[in-house]
Image (tube, rainbow, N blue to C red):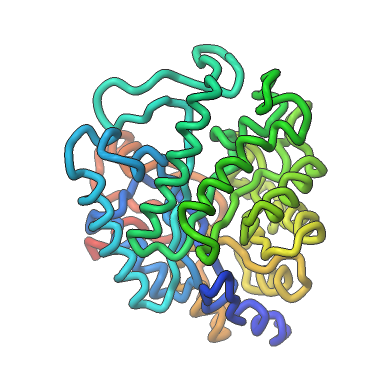
Length: 371
């Protein structure tokens, strides 16, 4: 393997004063581990000790980081932030950076227990009603407050989830957004909600705090978001103050986690197209399993960083092994999409086991606290 490829992969990168020790980012993984349990702490620390440059904690509803209202009890947010700060400090001790992905789903408002809010959408569909303009403003404020809470907890960056058919994505998608007000219609109008959220978040966290945006570059459905439209959004986000574009693909549940039938580097071409159109760093994702592929992506300027998700479940020490040239020691993810596509509670209900591994090739995954 050409040494310059590996050298490029392990060259530090600085984003708004935040230096990441290499170009390997752990993608946010929806495993329902939480952040404060022994299981969660052991799982994330194992990946940080394995040499990952930056850990992205899973997508978290903005309501949870907004106020006690979602928790249903006084002091709950402060307690959550305290626990989150403890995890952040432990990850920092390994030399890794850590951020969190923020999202909004389809309930307004979000509740952690009891009766959920109403189902909402950009335009009426099925059981979901159309969001009112005043409610959109409330959600924008929640994104800003949640990002400020993340910064308060010591997180190094925030990744705003504008992909995979969550609310930010749906406002941009012509499949979901048929509004006739300022939030819908043309491509430019469908960007409005995204740009309002970004500008509010930037104001809340300050100019020097790193902000990432998760982008579904294409929906892969007739009539959906095209790469050309996403590039236009990426350029608008850059102008509005985003620092990193994290390029993904598709909408839940379609094609978010490529199967073994799909090629390695499944969505790298989309990241490369976005990178050619913007001047901020870009992250590539999608079956990036081998150090050679990851090194090629960075050294050939297809992207500035690579995001590994399932591969870091399979082998949390992938970065260290790659940097040390121990390529034959790497346990490769086979993209089976079995245990890792289910959350911990789902696996428990399915098998009756409390300590089921999250991975078919790594029995320790999700069980680090027990072993």
